[in-house]
Length: 176
Figure (tube, rainbow, N blue to C red):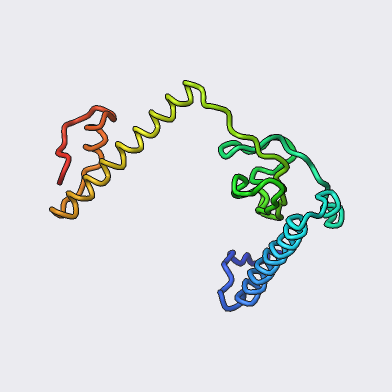
């Protein structure tokens, strides 16, 4: 006996609207609950409670990370985003941020702040090169923006790229 095959089709929005609304509301509520709970824990830490005590009561364990800098996150037990701006936390200050998987929050407390070491000559040279490149780009963007505003011109990006040292190809006018 052959059974008829019904082709697969997407449910109409009217049929799933309630389910979608409930799922979005549930996710938003869970996110808000996590954020509120983390904020309460951060407040307790900022009032001087011991990190281990607060972590234990929250059902978590306190872990010490390797040093964190503004440009490099710690390697080790900390998630990929331990704090959105750890450099803004004072010594002893606490903060929270979403975990790298977005399913929870990580709470940190700054144990120590060490001054940055003097840059090496290579780091200074790299920084100068990068700043010069960015300034050149900014100046060029302002110049082109001024020409476009004043004369109503558009830029042929391919020709501009070639003129600035990109791939060599056929000659094309820079402005159209």
